[in-house]
Length: 372
Ligand SMILES: [Mg+2]
Image 1 (tube, protein in one colour):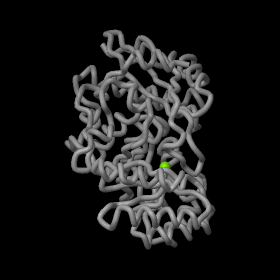
Image 2: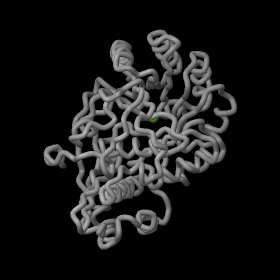
Image 3: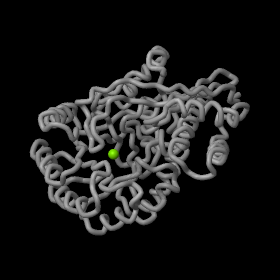
């Protein structure tokens, strides 16, 4: 029986090397997530993850006090119905931290369904049959030139044929960096650039024109995520694909970007957008509009990376997977199974986990050491 018996939420935190990954937001000092463990009556443990940047303990309270009572006693296979109830009980509409909490519970339910049936999650989703998925190196720091150069060399040495760079303001410096990296990799390697909301419309136009001239394949989050009009105008004005979606929650959050063809790549994060259920919905909505799907994982942990890989294997419009290249204990050590690791890269592709559910084992020692 896959009746849900218990729901536990655990806030986890681990330091990052601040010199390794500087973005337009500045250096990131720590990785933080909320791990959800859902237990069924027959002893299956499903794991989910919330992308949790702030106020971690409030996620734990929210999940254990508000969501758990709606999940306990229910069938883990009724994930669509449970998803609708979780959303209704919290706000009645989409909302940031709350959707991230729901994301963690939803991912854990998919893990349970896979373990209960002995199938990997991508089989439950209706897989394309891809055992390996195209991946790009993410990301070359917006920090010092010397560090960025070393990171580019390491990504090439690891076998990546597609590399994303972080850029920010001022515009001239961003163009310098984009030019430097193009010179380093030559013409045979695909490059993309992530602005992390650094620009207004006019500066985004200047940067985007240079990126297009340098042969960059996409320009990610040039302006703030709320500015759908800005994306629409940039899309018309620039000969380069725009990418966004990592900041959105639910298919409703992504609807205007996709339906207006304001982006050329949609990038939901399973630990933020509403779990596997909602990422799949976003992916299918994008498919209907001819927009490719490239799951975001960023600073997430191993559970989110596994969820992203299963979605990559299942969605027909999958484009490329974000393979993070800098050290992050949440990604590298939360599970005893390697997931999304650079060392697993073969011919520019990463393996999709093959075991039941998400196909990963959580390291209980790591959880105990990093629990807040
Ligand atoms: Mg990004």
